Image 1 (cartoon, rainbow, N blue to C red):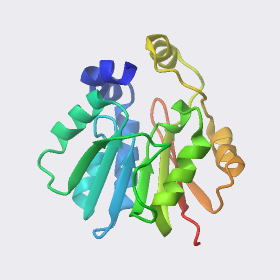
Image 2: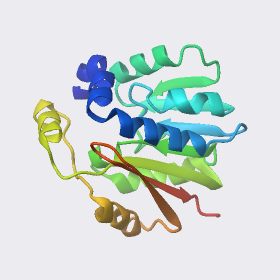
Image 3: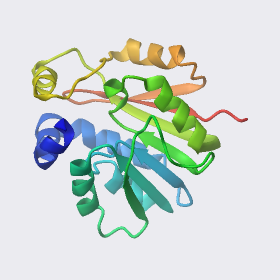
Image 4: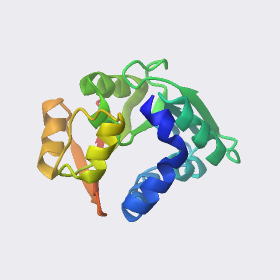
Length: 197
């Protein structure tokens, strides 16, 4: 699997290519957390968001499809006693309804065959009134994206500022707001409240 193969160098690539943006984005997402929150982080990768979220919340369940990525994330979060890391698929979450106060799914929507299934699953496992937070890089295709695709990343779509907002409208998501964190490749964070039942 591509993501397991690059897990060992992923952090270096992210830091060199887009470090400022990643710092701004992880800080912003962490600022949305509260001390009593139970949080689900999907597609946690090597733990870039996990290490910022964990100290702010009561419990973090972080999952990823790639065992190689999870191995790196576990190492980063080894000093946090409130983190559970598991392998899993964002489109088929194995958690009960209304299990979490918040869910974060960073930089994964553009990789999915069925992003609607992922959003539906996040809405299912987050309590009514809880927050769903989806940061995604916005870009015109460049050399880094072409290289990752050649290596096997298999991006399904890419977004600019407008098409990312339109994506959530088309998914039926209401009352969503956005925050763009600038960098070489900006990251646009979608934040919305899970509808009341």
